[in-house]
Structure formats: C-alpha cells, structure tokens
Length: 507
Ligand code: XMP
Image 1 (spheres, rainbow, N blue to C red):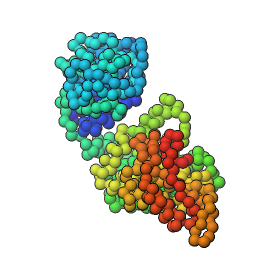
Image 2: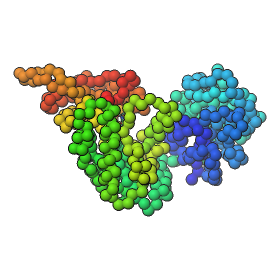
Image 3: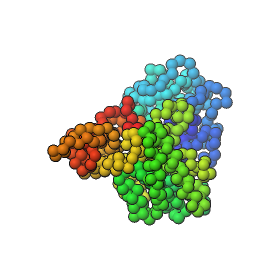
Image 4: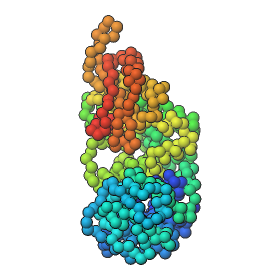
C-alpha cells in the first residue's frame, strides 16, 4: 500500500504528524531517521523536527536513498534545516530562539499555502534557522525572527517549514499538509477499517499462537481493545475484570453484559470488594488510598491469573497521550500531582510481554474503532473514569455506607444528564462524597447528615478544564432527587472551580 513515511528526528510532535495524516485518510509510517529500509511503496516523506542542531558533525541526517528517490519531501523545523544543510545551504544557531506563537507572511507564491491566507499564525519551537538557501530554492514565507520561515524547490518538490503545521495552534496547519500531499502520488482513502487491519497484522505477527491476558477496567480504551483482540484471537484472549467495589452503580454488570451481547466475549469477573474495603479501612490520605488500591489490584490480578492456562502476553489499552505523558515525565521529571493508578508494573512482575495495539492512537480514534466493530454508544462515548474509582471520590475514609450513597447519587446525576441531553456535551461528570455534617430539615425533623458534591467539566485534553455551565433548574432538580431519595444526605453542592488551580478529581 502506498504510504507517506514520517522520518523521526526525535521531535515531541512526531506522532502528531502521523495523526494529521490519519485525519486526512492517508496511510503513514513513522520511522526513526537511522532505520530507513524499504522505500518502494513510499509516495513522499515528511521529516520531523528534533532536538539536534544541523551544523554539528555526526548529527542525525537524511538517508541518501530518500534524497535519491526523487519523491516529494516536506521538512519541518529540524527536518527543514537538515534538508537545507544537506542540499548545500547554511544554518545559523546564534540569535534569538523562538518558542510559541508567531506570525508568518507569505512571500513567493507556493502551492503549499493555497487556500490559506497572506498572514498565518503559527507555532514555532526552534533555536537554529536557515541562513542561506541552497541553490534552486526560494523563500515562500518569513517571520520577524526568521527571514526564511518556509522555502520550496518546485522542480524537486522539496519544501521546508520552520514552524509546526502538525500542532493545532498553527492556523491552516492541516491544509498546508494536505497541499503537500497533493504533490505526492497517493490517495486519501485510509480509514478506521484500515487501522483495524493494521492492528490485526501487528497482533497476529507478534502473538502467533500464544495466549493473551487483558485487565479490563470497563473504560473506553480497555473495552474497545478487548473487543478488537477477541475478534483477532478468539479463545486465546482471556479478559479479567477485578471488581474492587469502587465501581459505579451496576458498572461491572453492564460492561460484561454488553461485551457478551454485542460480540460474544466472556469476561472473568473477580469479586474482590471486601478485600479492597478491608485494606482501605481507616485510610484517609488520597495518595495512600491510591497506592493501596493499585497494589491490591496487582496482587488480586496476579493471583487470579495463576489459575489460567499458560499466558505469554499482557494487553493494555495504553493510548498515545499516556505515552507522551510518561515520556514527558521521564525527561522533565514533572512533579507528581497524583500517582495515577494503572496496571503498570504487572508485565515485569508476571514475566509477560506487553501488547499495546493502541499506543499510537488518540481517544477519538479508539472511539471510531469501537464504532466500526459495533460497540454501542453507551460504551464508546462514556466519560473517563479513574482507575482508583470511587475510592478517590469518597473524600477521606472509604466505607460501604458512603460508597452506597455515592453510587446512588452518581447514578441519579448521570441518568438525569442523559435525560436532559446534557451528558455528551460534558467531558466528565460525577458525584463525590463529602463526609462533613450539615443541618437540614425533612418534614418536621432536623437531620444532621453528609454532603454530596457534583462536578462536571469540559475539556479537550484533561490537562485544563472548565466547569460545565449546567442550567440552574437542572442542578436544582438533581439536588432535590438526591436529598429526597438517599438517606443520610442533607445537602448537595456544585463545584465550579476550573483546572488549574483545582484538578478534575477531588483527590
Ligand atoms: P485530574 O484529577 O488529575 O484528572 O485533573 C485528570 C483526568 O485523569 C483521571 N484520573 C485518573 N485516571 N487513574 C486513572 O486512570 C488515576 O489514578 C486517575 N486520577 C485521575 C480523571 O478522572 C480525569 O479524567
């Protein structure tokens, strides 16, 4: 199949280039700059940015076979500089570095900027810049800080951009990439079915005739992965779902029923509710609770899998934002705000190979795959739910009474959001339990009982978020239902804090 090869020079945005290509229905592969092999089906190259400087000897460079292939090339940032350098131009690494927003002005006419505008807001992230163009090249855009912000060589179909068209902050970024693709001999017809085929090929070639184990959390990623793997592996896939008692009302039952009904997959449900509750007894600190839940999860899962037939692989629904997050953390040593609970640590402990077929996909792409294989909207479009579940939504100490009230309150809130057609316009909504007493009056009696909080946020990346502007009458209606229907609750509050400074979860 014809493809665009994304040559990776180590930019943090390389996968975003691949994502933009998938959005444009183009089949692409990302390949490290020093592992270039067969080029027969390559219709064009996109050279990523990278942290290196192109003047230095021994730096990552463009494989000669790429330059000899006579196929179109788009160089981005470092990709542009190294292209200019290898073609005989000069690079400067003095002067002002440019990070963040900038504006470029178009200079000579170029197909790359067709249907854009004369001045474009772009995203820059570079120290070096092209100082002298190679022969046969012309400037097609400039910025205050980069007189050569974009160049072209029309006879070779080589283009260079100092800015990042793959980043959403760059206006017309996708259009610029699409304009480049028109110079490559490739059809825009790659879709979710093709992504599924690619996953199929990868899984079959890795797993061969061995067995795979999957820890099902009930969230979108692991549920869609279970369905995809079951179609490929059938009985060689074993799904284990640990019910730690911190799930939403009827959650385990619904996920298991849906997978059985829609695709015929049987899930092994492990009931470990009392064990988790016992371990959480008397623990109020959020980080302690997270650690206990994570550790107990691993213990239970490991014990259960000892009874299974020989397993060689552990499948995880890791998606690309998780990969970026961990890479970012290891480089920048970001401060731990919350230790996220996942099944990390399991593969090494259990001596299993790790299978992560979604590691290059984004959430919406996983959702599209889910749709493609026929999972219901109820699963695909559901809001994210944290691994430690209601354990971090009961503020302070967790006990069964509090969990039960919280499950009921959360169920009322989510059901009413759906009834009022508000669920899908919020990114994440949930109820939380505040064990502080407040006075109320029910009938003629005084009550002195706990508080339920409601939180609903809108966000695209979950890194920043704003409280959903829910209609007042709606919140009032939910509040009335909660106080009337759940014993032990005297009051309901709605959290309107943004992230930052608050986080989405309370703990
Ligand atoms: P915060 O509270 O950090 O949440 O603003 C951002 C997103 O992450 C989810 N979250 C978690 N997910 N394990 C998870 O799998 C966790 O420990 C965890 N903590 C928070 C949260 O629900 C929101 O979607």
